[in-house]
Length: 217
Image (cartoon, rainbow, N blue to C red; front, side, top):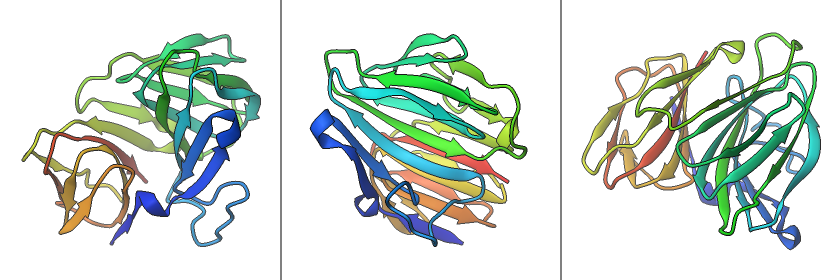
């Protein structure tokens, strides 16, 4: 089964007056949809935009694996596990909230910031929080999140290139940039696909692209 969701149909959120815009792929906060709560362990996939100087003040998380991918700009991150980092395009940031963690996310740069943030439910709640940052992850290199039984693959196909999708129970695909074709469906930036029980699928890039591909239980 392939369930394509369009970026234009995401729930709008954030606080535009504070320079924050958000597009939610799943039920989130005031946007409650009982038919769109999660896909496997994926609880949220948010497209975030912060103007220079904007950000999220210190706030808590628990029992969530939070993975951030910067599209444009730089994300300043400070957390209760002691980290203070700047996350740039090509980096994978992973906050395992465990039984409880707090963090600050801001755009302290001079240009607008855009990032994609995915939340996953762990297989077992609780545990000690932790933080990891992989600088400039290699093309196609898997980033494993054992706590959620998930693996992230970042792919950047050139025009005309074919990308095989993992033969997993579930696959969640998010298009960051580019125009793609999946099983006859045209996908563009912000679009996503929720794939269940399919094998041998390929994505064909019509233009140079960037994809976040989640291999899920």
